[in-house]
Length: 107
Length: 425
Image (cartoon, rainbow over all chains, first blue to last red):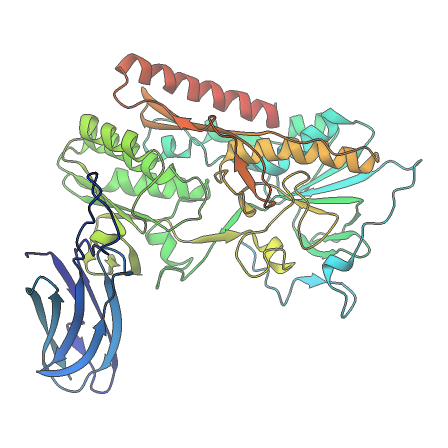
């Protein structure tokens, strides 16, 4: 699966500051309850897990369910501790995953 | 805008008594009933005129702070440079000639028990029925950083007048090749198709005068009013000029830094040459100060009388109410005003209130010779909200000929002269 993702990480932050992080993935989030015209169900196809890592350490994780709408958008916060990379990972139940990353300079 | 907060706005209700417990006092049969209308826009001016047209035995006072009313409908033509602000400005002489006592002042206090309105100038008006038509106010900092000072740099132009001209001047001053951004809030807001009409008319100006420029509509929503018609027009009339970004494509503006010229969405920072920020809105402050919105931003009314659900004896029409299936439009306000005026006369004369039908048509211009409309008829629904009458709601067809679009543009003009004459001529 090749999905479009968008992320937002502040370019700079002061040490100890609460940073807001945002992430969205363009994904149909098929819930498995919709029918095709032939009467068969469209199979479930969702992002089941979202993880955010800050310099390798997990700072946020979300389990997504079939009831969540298409293009899931998550905004959450974490404390700025050191300069480095923030990674966003979406796990698809077709076995693939998407990664996006950005750096933050902490002063 | 005056700062009328809940704190400094005097509500002289008895302690402990809720507004809902109040009943308007009986009108003495021999006295001339008195109605006070606050706000002289589409809703208020129409109520005042239609009260007098329905029953000239009623004394009507209209309180309006401005000497002239500038209509939001057709103000996008001023932004686009196709019309003058004078051509959309109206005075109250004809309203006075119709027997309405027009007072240029601001209401500072309402006493719903004694049924008294106090004006800034000191005058005190008593009423049997009060109508509030305060329109909308902009929610400053509803978009982070967007306050009144920011609107001098990034105009909203969502209350017609100086802001309309400011946006026009900024477009005129922009170099060819500049980026124009129109930021649209989430529902509910005044004039649902208005931002897209504005984008179209600005695009028309850019195409003719600054063809290397671009316009991006940053939208906090996923769909919008008359969307297929607008998108068809943008494709045909302004290819490569207009881009629409819905919320899911990082379209929602979350903050601005006006002095630095930065407009930020959830995932992007833009630096447009001209930014038109239309912020979130709520009912005019006088309705909020009285608590008529129940903390929800807009006021619920009885759809047969337009009487507040919170404060009997106080009616509301126009953009300040929760209009159910109707949009917040000048046409809708005028239609509600007619129903409200007839209901008030019935109530004052102890006659049964009629079952109303309400109407709306919103014309939009994609260019001065390219118009289309959304229309519908409405009635009070079982849930107490206004609902549409099945089969009456629709829009102009897609793929219509240039002649048909030109005809609809003329209908729009005709609508405008008729409705403004209904109020101001």
